[in-house]
Length: 221
Image (cartoon, rainbow, N blue to C red):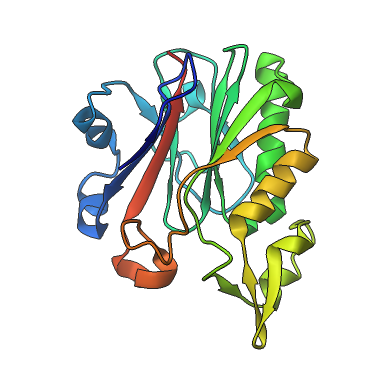
């Protein structure tokens, strides 16, 4: 359990863990929140590795997307990861929060930029108003990728790639941070380790179909 609760007017950043069997048994994850005495609704999308951004107030159980924005207090927005990057965004003025699922495909498709655009339209929040936390994800120590990832035009972070054998090692969190800063964010923090080599975290790359998931969520209080 990793907890960072330094932000005012938000619940903080928490990573709950369920194994693969529990993921199937409790797809809504609200019992994870309840286990930590956070009894609030959770808006979580059906993730598809794209760039669709959803409004928490307009979601249904089948809504597909990879980011959720909320402007209402008492509603948590969250996403699941098991190597992809969880990004939690908070408006310093307390007008909105967002949770973003940024794998390499979503990052290449512009999910982070689309979320910032949605915050601007829905709540008048500019990038200079936003603080971001990047959570545990695949690190450059372990994450081998091929030419499909290296050649993705929108992953505009060449420093995040290191040649390795006939492939590359890719620091996915560094790439997402570079995209965030290029989009105008100046307050960006990283929490936690590489999910592949730290056995206390779920990793699809390491464990395949048996992998559990991390839940990352944020809410206005």
